Image (cartoon, rainbow, N blue to C red; front, side, top):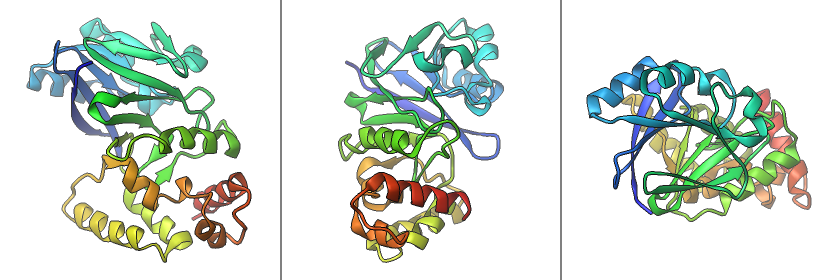
Length: 256
């Protein structure tokens, strides 16, 4: 397997689109293109030829650029098998446990429903890179539009088990607001307090807070820590049922 280079493109209000380049062959994937023009322009500026689109889920701010990029480049569109009917132009449909290769780079695919019914994530183990769409955010997780707390807790558990150095390339710059909420339920967490200061400093300079790492998320993300007593106390429950704790944390965030 080959390592990848990642180019992060901010678009719309707070989305990130990623260009993922296989170093060995030069093939390039676009992860969750919300729009087309900034993506095509950045690829052209880099001298990269787009060969694939990798979609995590069907929302418009993740697939809005699919067909225009396909028309401009002839690329292959890849997305979730469980949601193929809602992915514009999909040609390759993937599900849990499958592997996807473009060039010599290989991603492992996880089904991670909860935010939507058919969400997937792409993990490139050789490059310590996870593209998780709206399932896992920096210090947060996606709203449960189509899934249940049990589904999302199970999905996050798959990602939580990835190696510590794994870089979390989520799809939105939500970190600062996520941390404000996290402090309301886990304010005594020294790692979270330190992360809050670091994120505030980055945003004061208009710098991205993404990617984070799995190690950082395990230590500070309340949605990954619903099986810990401190989080249970933060929402007035006991930790015997992490799904109930997760549901309470998610409900609190929804109205924060």
